Image (tube, rainbow, N blue to C red; front, top):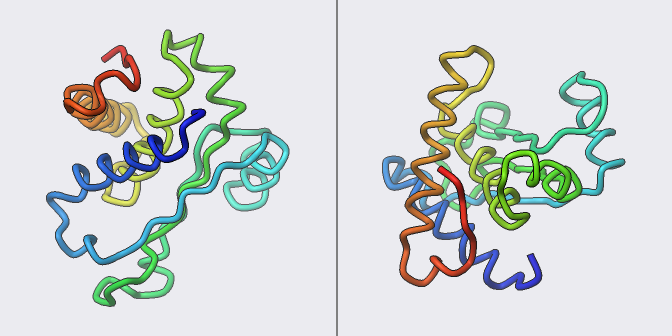
Length: 150
């Protein structure tokens, strides 16, 4: 996305929407990191034990550091690979910006209990992603930013 301020605004709105049901998360922070394909491959192979690159990896720090009750602490980090977004946006008939935003939304949803290990979990995750992306698309000041095929 060329306009980084716009991307940040969209991601903040997505986080606000996702955390409406999780008021304890309002004072906590989420890091979003964009990595090149080589760095994402290294992260994926080192921490997830999967070979090759991937679109998004989420690290949830709450369990590891037991910070559920501490305000202004990091909830986790979402690592996203824009190169994968470029490659896959055509496959899914999305524009690059939508694909990139979807990856961050996916990572955020992992932090709030969504998983994608089973078919049922994947269906729940996809439903939640579609709900967030449709909401973003309907926001008056965000409509022109992207077109997402829900």
